Structures are given as structure tokens and as C-alpha cells.
Amino acid sequence: MPAVVLALVLGLGTRAAQAQIGSERYAAIVTDAETGNVLTAASPDELRHPASLTKMMTLYMAFEALREGRLHLNTALTVSENAAEMPPSRIGLLAGMHLTVEEAILALVTKSANDAAATLGEHLGNGSEDRFAQMMTMRARGLGMSRTVFRNASGLPDADQVSTARDMALLGRRLMKDFPDRFSYFSTPYFRFRGRVAFNHNRLLQEYEGTDGIKTGYVNDSGFNLVASARREGVRLVAAVFGGRTGRERDRHMMALLDQGFAQMGVATRQQVAARRPLPQMLAGAHAHGLAQRILRPGTNGQAGRQPVLRLATTKPNTGRSLMRLEQGDTGRNQLRAPPRHAAAPHVAPPRMATAPKPAKQPKHHRRG
Image (cartoon, rainbow, N blue to C red; front, side, top):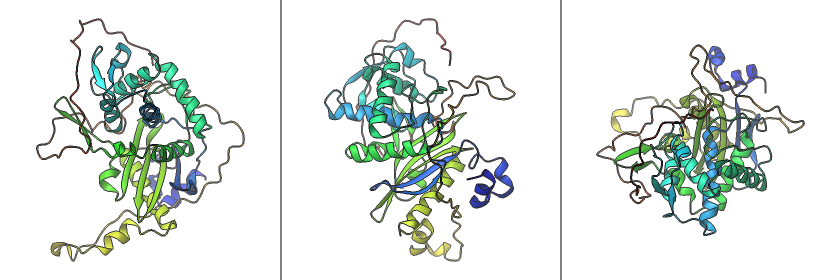
């Protein structure tokens, strides 16, 4: 769908030039989780950088190892120097430290921690994250993700690490179907780590009724990405959006797409659900302002011809700052911080992290992105 037409459909008006929704980085798909039927799509098979959506595959591999007995939730993982040097988003692991498999899982689904992802990937790859990335790609092919290539466990920028909206929505569905006993990890609201709290980057868990996962992602050259799962009245949808200019733009667009998908399935929208609820007396005369429907028509993009591999820019305009290793997971606002006094314990209570003695301070080695 041409960007100009898409902008008009979405009601972006004169702001379309500044928005990424509708740009060359944009892609989206909404599917019925049960059947896989596509309800809405736009450029679903165009190559995009998955960013931290990559961690969905890392977790798939971990869940599979747990199911087969090759891993246990309390298995201790040793943090390598390579993993400890991963850039943000991170939970501050040090070389020689130990964390359990469950702690690594929680760090990935909430904080989108790259140091924890690399640690888990190295363990599953017998000491090599590169080997693990090859295993990820092979497993993805087995799941039907025909256009996805992984190069690391975290989603940190790599020119050859690509996927599509269709492949990532499929991965979301497979995580749900293949590991129903593990899928609840994706709805963990926050993760306590050494007296601090890492909050889940997926704001739809609080803002969109029925959401129960699954993963956000961001690198400079992908924009803000999201795979989301939501269930209402017995209908579950899994959707993927790539290329938001901001996390908020991406989230609002995803909610509009889910609304449209539920409407197509005969399920009440958020506005209809809200209208059924009695308003408090003090708000009886107020108007309810919901998000306007932004409707996409099903895309017609096929898979004819090989798509060119995307290449990453290495610097941000006017700053010269390297972006090849930048990964925020969602936004920089969700940082580790002291736990709120009123916060309830998360539904998964991980054991306290055991640590090895702090290693002697060594010169820091910088890796090229």
C-alpha cells in the first residue's frame, strides 16, 4: 500500500511526514491465534530488522530445552566477559556472576536485557553465541519462518539479522501453542533484581484489555516494534507491528489494529466495552475519548522475488555517535529503579541471584559493532 494512501487511511493528515507508521520501515499483520488466518496485513513479507523481538526466539529455544530436560529453571548460568559487555538494555551482569535460567527468562521478558540474552544464548550454544544464532535460524526454518535470519540472541544490530511481520506473528503463535505452561512469563509486570525492579516494556499489558504478552523491540534502524497477544470473548489475536517512530505511536497503532481485528471477528471493541460499564457519578456527564479507529486494508504483498538485505546506518545524523550496538528494548524511560513500596510481588517469584566472587578489575575491551 503506498505510504500516502496509508497515511490517509490512518488519519495521520499533515503529520504523516514525521511519523514512521506508513514509512518504508513499516510492516504489520493481525492474525487469528487459533487458525493463523490473516485479518489485516501491510507489507507482511518485507524484510525488517527484528531488534529485541529476536529474544522471542531465544526464549523459544530455552523453553524447548526446559521441556526436553536439557535445562532446568534453577540451572546456574555463568556470565562471560562477552555477555557482561553487552550494551543497554541490560541488568548489569558482571563477568563471573551466576544467574538462574528463570532469572534470565524474567530479565528478557521484562527488561529485554541483552546481557542476560547473551548469557542464555552462550549456554545453549555450548559457549558460542554465534553457534546459538545458527541454531535459532535452523529452528525458525522448522517453524515455517522462511524469511528470518538470526545473528545473535539479543537483537542487537546486525545487517544480516532480518525477519518479517508474518514470521514474527507466527513465532508468537508458536510460543503460545507449543509452551502454554510458559507463555505466562510474557505477562510478568516486573522483575525484582538485587533490590531493584525492571518493569515490563510492553505497556499494552496495562493499557489494552485482554493483552497477555508478548514482546517489544527497538533499534535505530528498525523503529519501535511490537508483537502482541490479546484475548476477548474467547477470541485471541496475535499481531506484529514494525517501524513506529515512538513507542507510543507504535502502541496506539497496535491497539487500533487489534480493535479492527476483534471487530472483524465479531468481538466488541474497547469503546463498546467501555460503554457497557457504568461511569462513576462524578464522571456521568463527561465524554469518553477513545482512540479513533485507524483501519488498514489487507495487504497484497506476496513473496515473489528476493528482497534486498537491509543495511544499517552506523551513525546518527549530526552526532557521529555509533548506533550499531544500541538496543533499548522499548524506551529509555523504563530503567531499573528502586521497587515501589505499594507494588505487589510479580506472579513469578524467582530465587535470589547467587553470585561468584567479584573478579579482579581488568581493562575494558571494546567490541566493534
